[in-house]
Image (cartoon, rainbow, N blue to C red; front, side, top):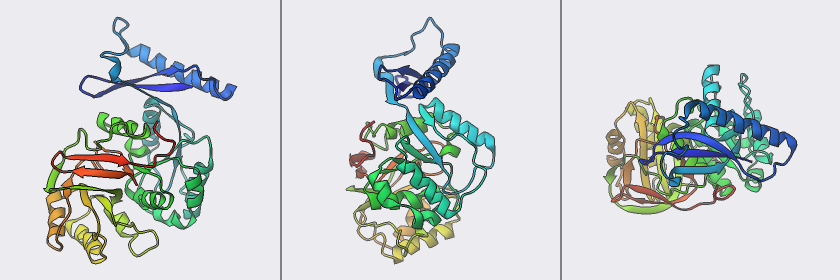
Length: 356
């Protein structure tokens, strides 16, 4: 088996990845050959860049993180990536970060809603897949909902990751199966990820050894307090479109988070008013406002405060949404928000495959 080795400096900044082979026997000769080829490619690349007079690990062993390579299957539940180089860059970054991408062919045909669901169902049913990652967001992921086999997903838990338009799938999958899904960067977002984004993604696939989701991220408090609830949410316009359908979020007892991108203020006002009039904020434990590109978050808060009594904590974390520095959030996990410490901490979750 090949393990990915992630090395950080003393400040916790991501530096590089290497690899090692454990003495665990491979399942077959093809797996062994693939593992050796990957190992040699990783080490060969590293030897080109490392001064042999220096140690491979520049600080202490505590800065080395190892996790088994995950087999990742790419699905296309929303749009296609237009430029092949953007796809290739994302796949390359995944490989360099310790993931084995099973299907590396550039998708050129957009599947029908049924085909999108069948693609997801098949990936969950495949014992050789560890993680299912969306190609990109966009529009139309919700059209696949009637064709998704939630019972199959419940019986074959795996990591399921994406964000933006994928909010329409991540939340229903979590609610109907009891599994955590990952509000995470997709292939299109991984062409040039920041060290923070990579570190947060790796923390998630390892089962969140770092429990404070806001660690290293800025946080502004609008309404102070502490709360415990189930983390749910995602893209505001996408989730608004699910209200009054069989797939809308059950917000009772939730710590809710929202983000959006390039929407005008009056449009965001319209979406939030829909949530208010629909009673969707009744019973929530707290609200986390992510990035709303093009708008100031205080404007979002004022829309809410002008229409309802905010008797729950409200904070703003700009590392949630369509941003370079992106937190990978576990939808469906029980979390605690502490505004005095500016922390969002995982308390309990049902994580596919256990801690990695």
